[in-house]
Length: 77
Image (cartoon, rainbow, N blue to C red; front, side, top):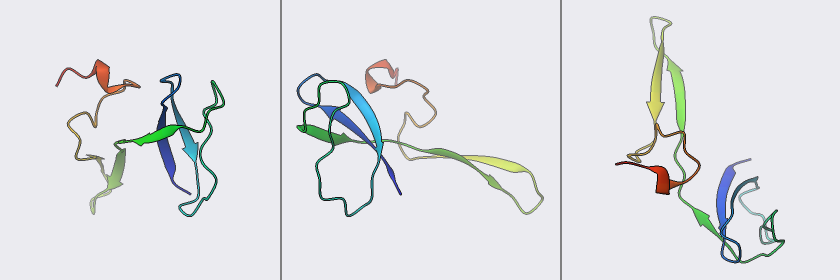
């Protein structure tokens, strides 16, 4: 089940939800309870094992892929 990131149009809080791809019900903001939310772009970071057994870091295509901030407002790129 994918993890999606959302931002509430009512209170501007950002949150994550595990949701089925075919979920019919709208996501609900955990702060204010509104359903007027938009899905925001998110990046990923992971590690892959190479043939030699060492680990190699991989990241999404976003320039902020290595950023640990919870908001792109903190990005310095």
